[in-house]
Length: 379
Image (cartoon, rainbow, N blue to C red; front, side, top):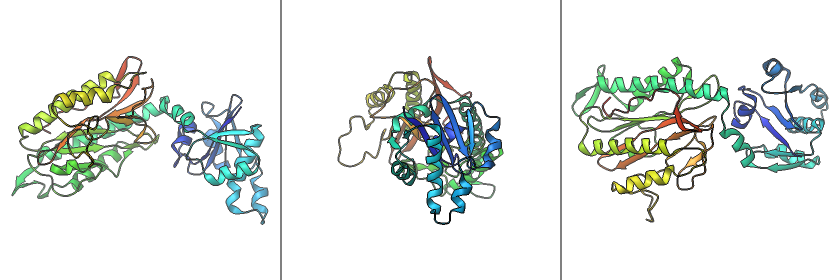
């Protein structure tokens, strides 16, 4: 029987954080073997895990694994102290084979193999564990979602209150820019216990620029896509939300794109159920009936630069983009996972529209974490 093994800090590894539930700054060892969950770490972590019987059955300090002996042995290489502690933990558990994720440190894997431990790299085992969210993660998503909505309302207020001057928007005596909106949204996130330095604020044809954050003045009467994916500081869990606004008077083309994206979002949410994978083709077929190009049937040599030219969504959790990925190669939804659904339409000279909600997949379908933020095109 193989033991499940991780070695990293909860700060940098979503696999570790999922299992231990604490954002540990230093590397810890996680072992699950023969019905026991074991965490090994420095004495500085002992207090964190002492009262966490829900996380581990046993805590082993590095002192118990004779770290002092390794440190005092001048001939023992510094870079092998960590790998040797991992080996000693595995040996103490009685395991001879370990299953690790693809992000496992190569140097540690090599050391284990040299010491006679069989190392099996298996992404499926670990990713399936992460897809079903734990209660503390769901609570983190909800906190992050409330923070994101507060930040989005701040952005909508700025767009609403801006005045028009010489072809651009002005607020408080100076130009309203993507940078100003991003800065105010970041402040609002921090005030609500979340954080993000990568809020997309794209105006006009900048909406066609993929993951570019957006810079410069916000244009009047043009679409402004705002995509906010903050991280809850307490748990390390993300959410993801997008709304599209038009400060001023939306064109008929933008109104049509917005109405069709709104209908596509609702269709996608209704189609997202455990054991199914039809959400993307259903939405792509809907858009094609409306006359929009999509990746589902596009066969051109150049990248599709307009229409519905991206996937429908992705999983959300300890990474903002994680399994399942909802697109041309979708996989069945799993009860208990969290997904972001984001249909979008983009056309040069018109702008773009994208609407995105993060929801929990339940046995009955999808459930929002909060009352959904308004989808209104006008802020």
